[in-house]
Image (tube, rainbow, N blue to C red; front, side):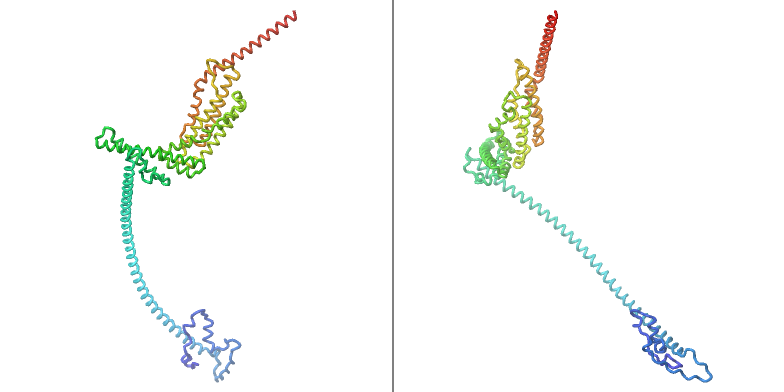
Length: 464
C-alpha cells in the first residue's frame, strides 16, 4: 500500500493495453482501480469487513473521506500510466505508418512493373494477332491458288475424258458398239447423258464454225466431227428412248422417285420437252375411248342431241368438275416428278382444252347453215342457247384450271379461240333467229286477227 507521504510510490502498474481491447467499459476499469481502496464498492458477497477506524488524534477533527489521499495518488499514477500507454501507442502507430509506407512503395513499384509487363504483353498479343492475320491472308491466298489449280486440274481431266469419248464417237457412222462402258451402264445414265450433251454441243459448234467452204484440212476435220455428231445424235435418241421407256414403266407402278430421276435426266434433252409431252400424251383422259364416250353420255344423257339446254348445262357442270379434279390430281404428280412443273401444267391444260373440251363441244354444238336455216324451235334458237351455255361453262372451267396452275399459258386466249368459228358468224345467226322470231310472232298475230274477224262475222250473221 502507498504511504501517506507518497501513496502511489509502491503501486504496481495497474493499466495495460489489453484493458482497452474488446468491449471496453469505463465503469469496469474504474471499479478495478478503486476496488482495493473502496471495498464498500465491492459486491455484497465478497465484501471484506471494514478495518477499524484509526484512533482519533487529540486536538484534530476526524477526516471526512479517509481514502482520498490514496485515491489521488492512484489517479495520478493512472494518469501517468495512460500517458505512457498513449506514447507507446503513438510509437507503434508511427512504426506501423513507416511499415505501411514501405509496403505501399513496394506495392506501387510492383504494380508499375506489372503495368509495364501487361503493356508488353498486349504489344506481344498485337504483334501475334498481326502475324496470325498475315499468315491467315497468306493461307487464304494459297488456298485460292490451290483451289484454282484444283479447278484447272479437274477441267483438264474432264477435257481429256471428253476428248477420249469424242474419239470413240468419231468412228464408223452408226457404230456404237465400241463405246466405253459408261454409255451402256444403266446405273450411270445421268452421267452419260450429261457427257453426251456436252460432246454433241461441242461437235455441232465446231462443224458450224468451219462450214462447208473450209480448207481441205479443216474439211477433213469437220467430216470427222460430222461423224461424231451423227453418232452422238443417234446415241442421244437411243438413250432418250430408254429413259422414256423406264419413265413409262415407273409411271404404271406409280414410282414417283424413279419418274423424277428419269425426268431430271431427260431435262438435258431439249429441256425435257419430249418427256413433258410424252407424259401428257399418255394420260388416260386423252387415249381412253371409254372416257371419251363417258363424256358424251354425261353431257347429253340418254336423249342425245335432243337434250334441252338445262340438261346440257347440268351435264357440262358435272363433266367440267370431273376434268378439274383430274387436272388437280395430275398437278400433284407433276409437281413431285418434273423439274419444271409449270411448263408441264401448261402443256396439260392446253391439251385438255384443245382435245377433251373441244371434242365434247363439237358433239353438242352443231352449227346450222345460214343458207338453209332450220326451224326456229329445236333448230337455230336451240343452237344459240347451247352455244351460250357452253361458252359460260367453259369460261368457268378455264378459271378453275388457272387457279390450279397452267404456267405461262394464255388460257383466256385459248378459251376464246375454241369458239372463234362460232363467234365469227354469231351476229348473222342471232339476226336470223330474231327474224324467225319476228315472223313467227307476226304469223301468230295474223292468225289471232283472222280468228277474231271470223268470230265477229259469225255473230253479225246470227243477229241478222
